[in-house]
Image: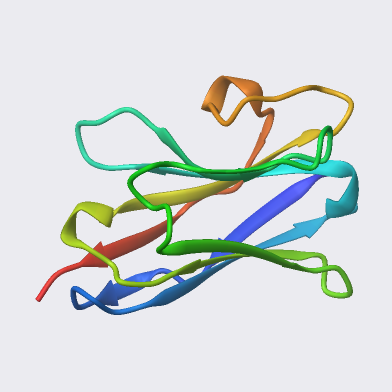
Length: 125
């Protein structure tokens, strides 16, 4: 059974950093396109960053470009989202999601079919 579990969220001051983890079980991350999404209260879920195993591309939303970085630990089967220079507008529930690499996915929620439960990130002084 394919499962994703996010962790690493919390409360951080503006300008601070957090690293979110997305631990996968039941499948190998290397065969899947992985995306990070976020949803703030009253707003639609939006794509933050995605790494495609279909074409090798990496996407970052304009709002996080230069501040957020994807990485992966293949041995642990964990995908990370390093978030630096956090801003209050980064406050949201963050989700990781996966779709098999045979599906050419855009970094939008509708392209992904497996989701974690989310982790809260709050940026506030």
